[in-house]
Length: 408
Image (cartoon, rainbow, N blue to C red; front, side, top):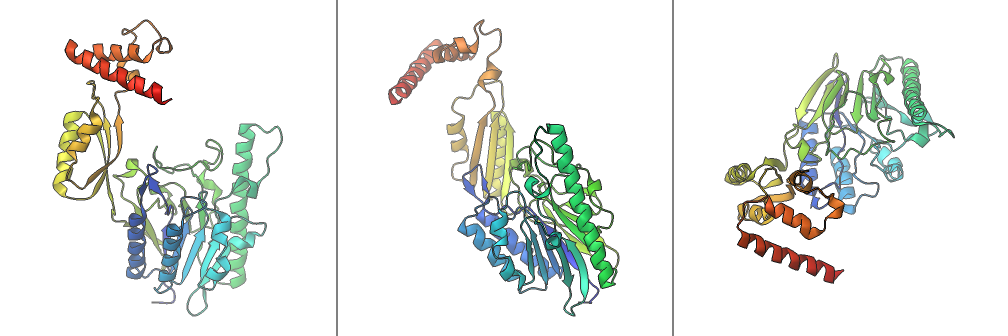
């Protein structure tokens, strides 16, 4: 590889240890992604790997997640990749990430778990095999409020928002100045890039993406003008949807869908090529586990499930029944539909809720004035059922109510 060639891969938000609906393990997906990433590093001759926060889903990752992480780091060092930079996200434990940083440094793996009193801890100069400086990285982790500013007594929400935003901007200005001074000291016009794990205006997110607010409300939504012009690229993490704030300021997003709302998205990593002028390529990540969301009435759900069964693929499905017709045995019916298939239904919603089926015309009483049987009778009367069928359902319902009271 030419000494002046520099290729960097930007990834973030792995969320190792993540589950789906708090029950479905995703270890196989994460392992498949890390295997793919290892192959991609070798295929594209990546020299620098940037991981922009949220490596783990929780501050106390389980042993399986830890093994995935450390096994991957060891394997990368047997490739052409010369440097790995890991910065902490808001889901990560700074102390956990930082604990092995001295050992990992011997493998050219730089870890910045959190901001410290010494800003130079975030400044990383990367060299090639000839010990020539090639790149300066401002490895800025997730900036916790306590790391950049202090609460002022009597401060209102607006004042606090302004204070936090201003201090984040000051932090980036200070690390940028430090990088400029370092480059001048080296006497080589090498690129300067930065990382960030925060919410920047223009970033895209979904309702069910699991993005945890970093502060309170939307205080952390900040303009991209916090990043000084000296940065040739800003590798962002925190939002799970790939998005471009500016050409050189980007979220790569999470490598696997965080929820069904992301099921149709193409996940990606970015590859930066500094061989001459910066070139940014988007590499799509394969789908390691198919997720499908079905919303509609009985006929639509039935036809969609039938089509999915024909693929013979292992598919995780979320179903939301939405119709004007009451469907009391939805769960049993769906179970029958997916029987003897590779489809696994992880979540089942019956969108026809009580608030949707009760109208002002049904009763002059408020819901608080009605007992369980009153509500049940109103719902029964809205259905086209025989009186005999209604009586049977009433008896069954009363037995259920009695059983619940006995069990209290």
